[in-house]
Image (tube, rainbow, N blue to C red):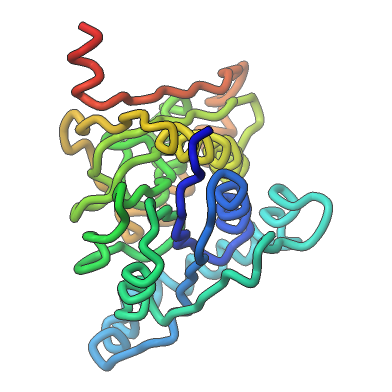
Length: 277
């Protein structure tokens, strides 16, 4: 029987992030769970956030999300039987940001087989070199066509609900550009909205993430280069006019009769493909 992989988990703090972290802890031997607090500021970052365009955008998004998240529906979706929690809180480490020297130091001390990421800031610099088998990320869109932020929204806005989903991929120096491991597309039903589809994608992806860890522990070779650059969506791209346009399309019946099953596509490495041809 193969030995479980040693995992260093880097994740966000929301219910969806805790759900995925718990699935990974069951799939391998977690040696630490790292979350960033966002507590380290400098003058340049402060001035950028206080620019009128950035400030207005942040206020609008805060008001929108406050309305959407009233009653904490995400927590109820991922933890219907209780409060969101880590199964292994004793493994938790907090850092100001994910590229902090303490994270690199931790990785070098613990020597994980694999670094598993979901919901952190972009990973840069020395941390990219860590992990015996590399670093894997769960991205909330189908790369390369949907990279960056708010990809569930943009797939719906573009009239492509069949392209809602998540990507499991290796991390490189780009933004969601690393070698593909799996595409996870959730069930899509009439009446589904952005948040439910995103959460359903993440819940399905937690199972696939755990399976990927098990496959790598067995020595399987996963990962295929992305076929092009696709499209990168950024937070600032999404505005009130886009929100209003999507709401109007949904109201006019865009999702009527929608009934798509869950779909999972695995990507074997190029060398495996060559042997099979």
